[in-house]
Length: 514
Image (cartoon, rainbow, N blue to C red; front, side):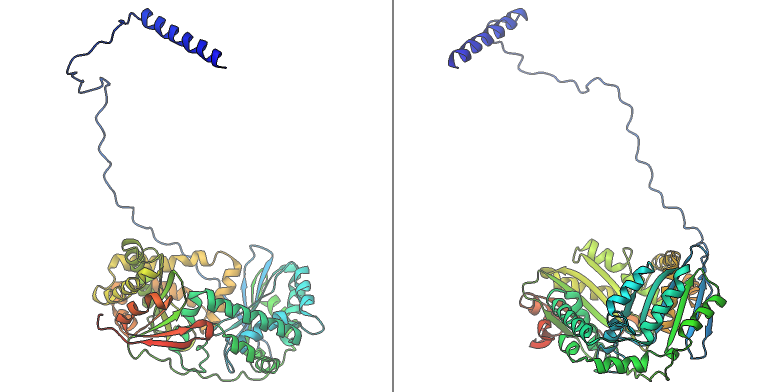
């Protein structure tokens, strides 16, 4: 190998020398001039660099196209069941919703309504087990959905037109003849307790919202519980569920909503066939005491050890949902924190980089004043500054009311989004449910949209003192050992342990700095 390398090296030297001789190169190195003048140009002809185009404003938005909400035909069966029909022939599909005017914690221990709703799906009906019910629904090419909210319980299905009779037969049996199987209830409670424990341990948003609702509403108020605690779930039994169903799930407290490929006469006929024999008394009266207005600057801190992030909320009360100037309230909230054009987004998130997500949201309920919650999700190290950013923007709404341009952007978004919200017949069915749940009249969505379009900066300015002029309290979910003392500058800090059902751990007195 060495010999081959030496021969190769010598050969390369010979070639290099031959090339130097062939090119007429000297045998010794030479030196060039001391200075070389480089040309100012490379000699290539180039045209003059064009000036950047003048920045132009986007063209003005055109008038929004009309997209009226479909008409709703209503009737009642002899037993008091309401029937609401929206006809759409686009596809041979019917969206079915049975809406019961009873929320998750109406008229009894916390969460009984919520558990009852789930047992309508999981507890079986008549001679059918839970699995039998779901299998029958699947043979119709459908799914059964059940949900419970603050003010309503909804059982839903989507059916092809030819399967409507079969679907309503099953739905009627679920509502009228629930089994509330003891074994299924035991399994549901076990799952629900596991989910509640996991949420308390891992979800800052869940823990913060639980505190907001419990602090805004007095004990035993139907809205006081947001997210059931393990001890609350454990206390619910089959007798309470049966009693809640007997009192609240009655025809006079319900509406059957049918949206899709059928007319009013057909809808009433099929409703009578499957629900006409449903019996029940008058729904019970439910009391809704006034919410607890914040009385002083307070901070509630849900301790999440070693959390590197914080969920920061500022809670206050907004006017009731059926307020006369509700359109202006929605526009004002949109300006503050309703989207990427909002003040919270552009200031707290974009300009100051204090949060990875911000929002301002009215949590709509049917009765009385409603929670208005500002939110920032942020790093632990930025918790206090993110909170300060939220509060500064609330103050700026009062001192620097929304401009005409901000108002225009907000109202256009809120009014024009309706066309997207109504893109499917299922969405339309859900909007009928929402209107019924909030106690809004037929024709409301078109009237509301008209009010939005007519809202101007003066209208928004008029509601700002009411909306953002009241007292608030602060809720933070994060590591109390890291952020607790910093938060004391905003008021007295009450540290809670969500894993021990929000037991008070300690109180940090307010600091002098504001």
